[in-house]
Image 1 (tube, chains in turn orange, green):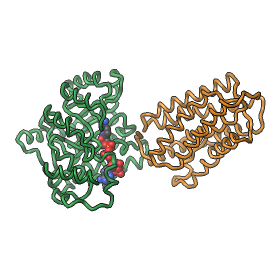
Image 2 (cartoon, each protein chain N blue to C red; image 1 turned 90 degrees about the vertical axis):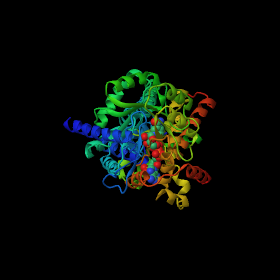
Image 3 (spheres, rainbow over the protein chains, first blue to last red; image 1 turned 90 degrees about the horizontal axis):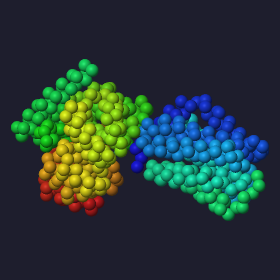
Length: 216
Length: 313
Ligand SMILES: NC(=O)c1ccc[n+]([C@@H]2O[C@H](COP(=O)([O-])OP(=O)(O)OC[C@H]3O[C@@H](n4cnc5c(N)ncnc54)[C@H](OP(=O)(O)O)[C@@H]3O)[C@@H](O)[C@H]2O)c1
């Protein structure tokens, strides 16, 4: 049960982007750094990528959900809390425990991961060319939920050892809820992307169940 | 504060007049407001005899437009048309995001007319948070008190009812009520209607969702409760099946110029209904909806036929 229309959501996004500029540049730089660290692994790379991912979830949880969407949607703080929790889980697993390492892979998991990263980092931002409100409808990883979840699930498919289940639960639940919402609003592309997220999250879980832990 | 007290004085004068008219049995129609063509349909609140216009306005989704100034101005125009056509009740809730703030902004822009009948809700499980929430609603609307305060979806009703009764005694609210929507917790609602000292009840009723005819509407009449009907258009879903279809022949007998008026006249012609609160974001739709307050209403035989014909559609 949504309490706002698509028109109002777009207007909220426009105000949000206007207020954030030029913070977008920092977000893009951090995302590119994370991608470089997957392509060219470093000793400290695992922790750095986890920090980037966690920062995105914490930002979206607090600034987007609680502070912005919370003004028009009574359920936004709930989503905000879930995003904050995911941010803390990423910090705990990836930074404190140092349990996450990333590497490129060319199998099915790697291909799906690349597709998700491509959509999150390039295709979603590029789609603003087709939006009436232009760059104000920009959706970037670390600033908006959909690209952040797509990017994170893509990255979770690229972990060197199996991904802890607790990092997959919130992205999966979010994708299910977001898919249902997008469906209600007849947003075809968003519904398809949420479905892709669900599929990829299930693949992350599946990979964890069948794969033997590998050395990083 | 000056403007507010003048506004309140205005309201009281008109209200006293209306209550007096109701007592003399003159409450069925009031002279048309500027902009309206003919007298508009008024309905008495059973417990006081005060009359209110039979079509009000909901704010769920339609008035939740956030900070966007363009959208806020456009909704103020919807509000302006509502009042110009004799509108009275505005229904909102803290659950509706920015809707209360947008209504308040509109009232500040237009000046609240003396026909305004402000209705909002308390919506929290924590009884202790209710007072603060209601104070916040008064601030958002820019009003010193509400005409009607309702307990939203019966949430925490035992605790809130105590507060509401006290607020009523101390003049912070004139009427109190409870709300629910289609098919939800009707049994509990019936219990409250039968046993608690409330003035208003709000639930869903429309030409398709007619469950309320069985028990809720007769019980409201028996207990002398004013009835607010929500989701009169089934959240807009009533329109798609009739899109492009000509109006039935009987629509002319009740002076309906469009489908919105057919749906609304079906509702407000039920003797137990006080007010229907369609929500709209568009001035043209507001004009259509308010048109349901003028002209003839269906009698019981025609109401049955309307329900039959529309069920078939
Ligand atoms: N439990 C509760 O307390 C509770 C529950 C439900 C509802 N309510 C209250 O009841 C109000 C009414 O219910 P609702 O908003 O759910 O549904 P509704 O009034 O049955 O339908 C609203 C929809 O109808 C469309 N509409 C309005 N006038 C129209 C016209 N003349 N022609 C074509 N389409 C028209 C609106 O679209 P446009 O914007 O395009 O006109 C909107 O999408 C709510 O706003 C709320 O205040 C309370």
